Image (cartoon, rainbow, N blue to C red; front, side, top):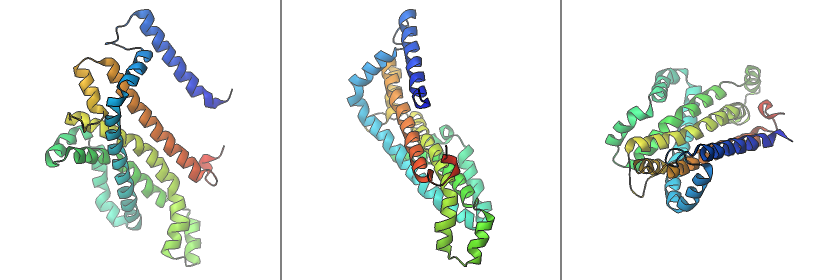
Length: 254
């Protein structure tokens, strides 16, 4: 049996153990629902959860797109000027180390639109890994290759296209895999802090509503959607990394 089946078998074994524990110990469903009950609840309530899931996805990928655009652009400026990096990189560090739970209430006060506030919170969480990894990648080009490009009088565009971008791409993709999960965490955390309610809300609000009503199976159903979303985001970017790097980068060689 190949190793690709091991994660699936491990997950199946854990779910089976969870199911047996609940049934044999007669644990009430409002304390710990069995996986079968969670699956049934997800099936029955998927229609009401789908809209919230889509809202969470919009916030997550919107924040990730902004983090990629801003992080790459600012990283390029930092790579070109050490002075600019020395002046503004500490600001990025401050954003990174400040817990989003602490600043989300302030953002909700200053930003009128709740959706825009949630997007900003998720962006703050996802921005720094893109920035720091891309800066590191742009500066990781082989010095001998830099000298070679300079010797042949390569244009700035040629250096960017043939030297700096290939050098930074593995680092950027690594940061993208990190930021993908962080943007989802930021979106969920900010919404929980906001305590938003209504139709235009995400899965975090559904979890809070279910907790207030002691609907534990529904909480687990929404949580399953969140976990599945995070796993799919990571797998998608991991597949993208293998696609872009598999033919030439050492990190993707068997």
